[in-house]
Length: 401
Image 1: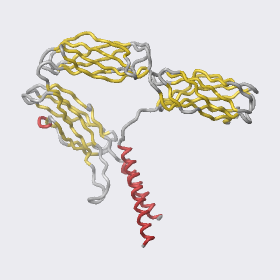
Image 2 (image 1 turned 90 degrees about the vertical axis):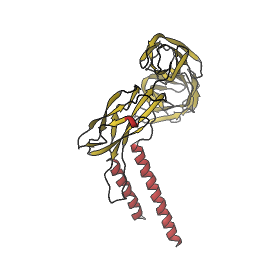
Image 3 (image 1 turned 60 degrees about the vertical axis):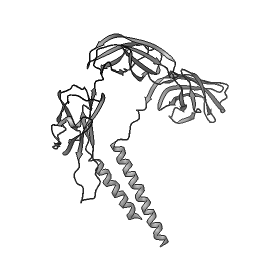
Image 4 (image 1 turned 135 degrees about the horizontal axis):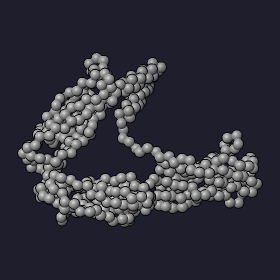
C-alpha cells in the first residue's frame, strides 16, 4: 500500500513540476474592428507576449469568415530565452464586394508548440494559446446604425457622462439622437434622458454624450435607444452608483442584570436599492488581557432596499466582571464585511455600547472563470482520486483471490 501511495505522490509532483513550466502567451490588441471597403488592403500589427521570458516556439494560424483574404507575415514565432515579445502582422485584402451584410469574425490563433516529453506516446503536454479577433462589419443597404453604450463609474450626487458610440453601417447619411432610460431593481423608472443630435456619414461614427447626476446608491439598468430617421439602434448595460453597504446605527441593551443573559438590539441601515440576502452580524468582546469574554452572533436575515432593521444577539454574562471592554461588530453580507470598533461598559444593571468608528469595509474580488492554474489543480485532483480508486479496487480484488 505504501508503494502505491508513493507512486501517486510522485505523479502529483511531476504534474506540479510541469505546471510550473507552462508558457504564458498574450496578444495585444486582443481585437480589432473594421468597416468593409471593397478592394481596399489593410495591414494590422499585433504584439505577441511571452510573459515568462522562456525559450519557446509558437505557431500562427488564421480561421473564420475572412480567412481566405488574410495573409500572415509569418506562420511561426521563435522566442529566445529572455525574449518577452515579438511583433507580427497580417494583411487583409478585401474583395470587391461581400453580399452578406453584418459582422464577419476571423481569428488569428497563436499556439505554443510543445517540446516532446519522454518517449513517444508518453508524457503530459500542457500548452497555451491566445487569439486575436478581427471583426469586419459589412454595410447594410440604406440606413443602418449600431449603438454601443459606455458606462462610467458614478458617484452619488456627482454629475458624470454616459457615452453612446453610434456607427453608421448603412450606405446613407443618418441623423441620430440618443434616448436613455434608467430603471431601478424592481423595474421602476428612475430617469429619462436624451442627448443632442448629430449627423453621421456612411462608415463613420460619432460619440453622443448624456449627463446624469444620480440621487440614490445602488444598481440600475440603463437602456439606450438611438433614433435615426424612423429606426432605432439599441443597447443596455447595468450601472452601479456607490458601493453595496450596510452600516450599524446603534447598539442597545434592554433590562439586564449582571450574570444573566443580555439581549443586544443591533440597528442596521442598508444603503442599497435592492434586497440583501444572507446577512448576519457577529460581536466579539475582549477584556483588558485581550481575552475573549463574549463571542455571539445574530440570526441570518434579509434586508430590503434602504431598510433599517433590528437584529438580536444574546450574551451570557455569567462570570463577567463590571468594567469597560473593547469590542467589535462585523456585518457579513453578499461577500462583503462592515466592521466597527466598539467600547462596551458593563455595570450591575446596565450595558452601554459606544460605536468608536468604521475601521474596515472589505469587498471580495469578483468571480472568475477557471484558468490554467485551476485546470492543473483539477487535473491533479482527478488523477489522484482516480489512482487511489484503482489502488483500492486491486487491493480488494487481491483479498478475494
